[in-house]
Image 1: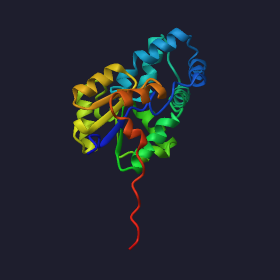
Image 2 (image 1 turned 180 degrees about the vertical axis):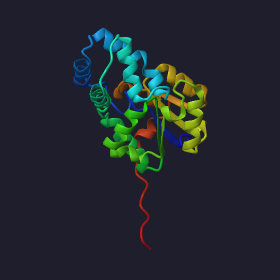
Image 3 (image 1 turned 135 degrees about the vertical axis):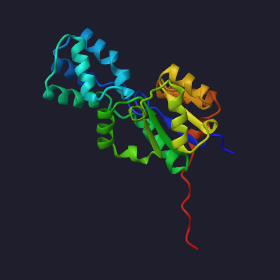
Length: 218
């Protein structure tokens, strides 16, 4: 019997690729910040945004305040668009694999640290997100990885026991927490490394699953 009944994906750096440098440059131009100011503000308030403690608008207001300035409504709207583009480069091998799992009858889900505006933009942009059984977006729960409670919540909505879930994430601390919650977990650095890790953990058969056959007419 297949011990893995569901595969749970992180979004950023797993279903998407590295951030788009052109989108980052747009954010620098919109804000007028130098690299240090934008980097410090962007990451300094990202966790509260992803956790739902800040909305997308409030997040950018805080980023601006950290640099001793303010932003107009138009600037914030443009920054939200640029931020979406930053993380909207699809990682095609992983998306295609997720779709193969879905066709093979393996339940798939997403567990991502992500804020309200980003989630709304991604859902509108990518129809393939609708193929996942459930998406656990951190801001909706006021939790964020690596808090154990968010893994338990994701397993519950997948309706799958943690021991039968494979979780994939790029960050070691999130992998460690997933394992602590009872899930199997594989770190994603790049696709070659991922395939090697799947082999090492005896899970490479999941990369080769075939679609469930359609029933034939009598």
